[in-house]
Amino acid sequence: MDKNFFDLVKDNFFRPLSGANREINYAILKKLNECMQSNMEYMSRADIVDEVVEYFKYRPGLDMQNDETGEKETDIKRYASSKVTYFEKSGWLASERNNDFTTAYQMTPAAIEILTAMANVEKNETKPIEYSGYVYSIYSQLKHFDLNQSTVIIEQMQEASKNLNNSLRSINNSIRKYLNDLLADETLTPNEIMKLLLYDYQNNVIARAFRNLRMTDNPSRYKNEIIELIDYYLYDNMGRMLENYIDVKCNGDKSGKNYSDAQKYITDVFNSIREQFENIEDAIKILDERNTKYVKTATSRVSFLMNDSVDFEGTINSVLKHISEVDLDDEDAFEFPLKEFGKIDENSLYSYTRRKSRVKSKISAAKVGLNTEELALERRKLLRQAQFSLKSIDEFICNSLKGHIELEAKDIRIGSDDDLIKLYLAQIYGGSEYVHYDVQLKDDFFEYGKFRLSNFTIYRR
Image (cartoon, rainbow, N blue to C red; front, side, top):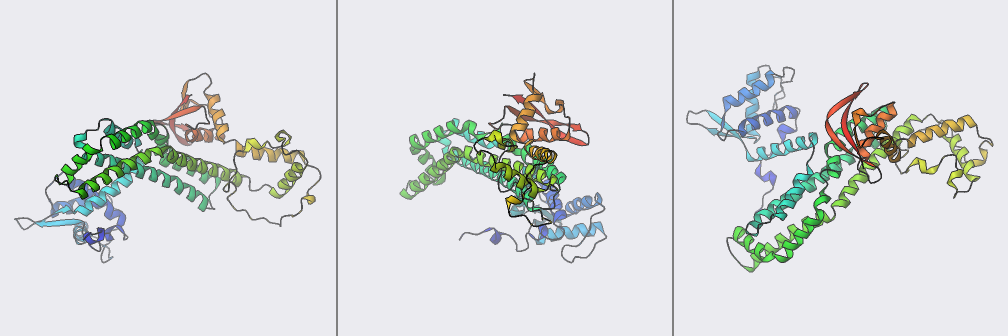
């Protein structure tokens, strides 16, 4: 009978990571696991207690609250001892009695796996994801495929394929999270939105992974050859792969069921990887579109919030009246060239603004004449919404690159805060088929006023 995870661990296994002390407990368990990794022997209770005491000694402000009773502890050593007992009772530590009647511990198998998974989450959230590792692993294994070791190689490719897919899902969820957070919080100010876009999003999504995925680690570089190699081994070498699978997995038992199971497994793995790489460009395109949507929504909302004092009712009436007097096919007749404004979607004017008076329902109520100064003011505000478009960023970078094949961001002249925003957005738009430059992130930083910026190199295409 198959067992699930909760058949294998104690009922209170996750209690150390769900109570008030969860952050402290996780830090201690991680520390103990690291201590035990370098030693196959069990660790004495005295040594474990000393490690926990040391943890609290260097963090004197931590609240020492008993996990089970909720009471405050004052004695560090007694509190450390209660922690060890608590971890043992909840199934994180396995004990063993030594010949001298002392107790020693090791992490339980479930504890090791869970702590490893949690460490991987931390690593992926704070360090760049190297997609090329997964992609190149599949490519290299196919390129140097040994039919005598085919079963092991197929299992390795299956694992690499799964890791690649999980990484793509992870970055997709990261972009979605930032977009949802931006749209859900109506209290954000323009400065807070730009900080979210230019700092948090840059560091945690763009600089960390998205740039690698679209440029240096783009899986499509190996796509065609991977598909060709899969077809070759799947259709021309199935017999030898079946024989190897039977020898390795079935102890040479060549029954019909074993052959059927082997063929299904091999075919499923190869076809799954083949489908993954056939659709890899579509997957990257979806991520690219979601990233573009986030940037566009953020900048649109900033522009809207900065202009929320505009008399939109009067402006719309004036524009509608003007539109009614011109040929809709003649875009040059518009006071506001439509091509300059980029795309408008359902999120462009997301923040809801309450009107102080009811909207006039009849266009005929608009003033006959247009105030030239007001029109110029509104036009400048509307044009500001377009100055962070992809076209505008491309022009800014190309002008900065005049006379240079490549240039570091720190050497670009920043004349205003708008230039600073454009320089940030250049990282996001870099690599798009609609711009004339590429970028490569660097490890150093430079300062502009009170801002500390990540440096990058810009290359002319």
